[in-house]
Image 1: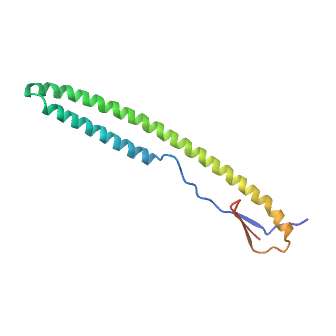
Image 2: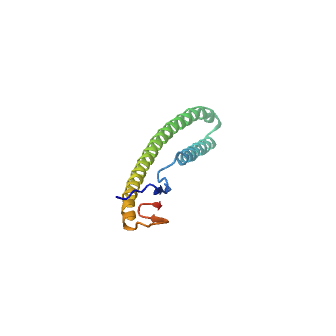
Image 3: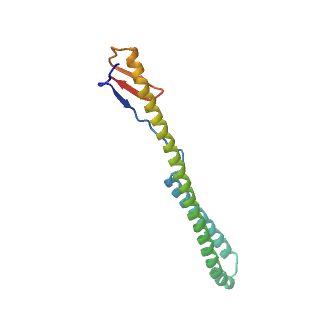
Amino acid sequence: MIKNTTNKIRIKKGHSLSLGITLIEVIIFTVLLSLLITNMINYLYTIHLNNIKLMNEIQDAQKGFIATTAIILLAMGTLAFLLATLSAASFYADSVQAREIRIQKQLNERACQETLPLIVAKDYFFQGEIRLSEFDCVINK
């Protein structure tokens, strides 16, 4: 029986890239969309005020303010719901991907540890380092 008291296994950590939507992207999208909607409402409101007479302008401005406020509140509520939904979906996708990466790393580490006795049994006088790229590990003796 061969004892391997001096063998060390070093698992190299891989890099994980998130493929999901980040919270920053959702916030940027929300801000840009709200700016676009606000500017469109402002533009339409200005066109509307320029095309009516002076007497109707005051009455329509009051009605337009209420309508503009209602539309902005509805748009912000929709965007807040969208932000919450997208952030939850992004968090879930990232957690699933991180779990898959952890499981794969554990499987690679186990396979690397199971390969070590075979390498030592094959070459009793093994010295140096062996890289097993398929398991992403390095074996040093």
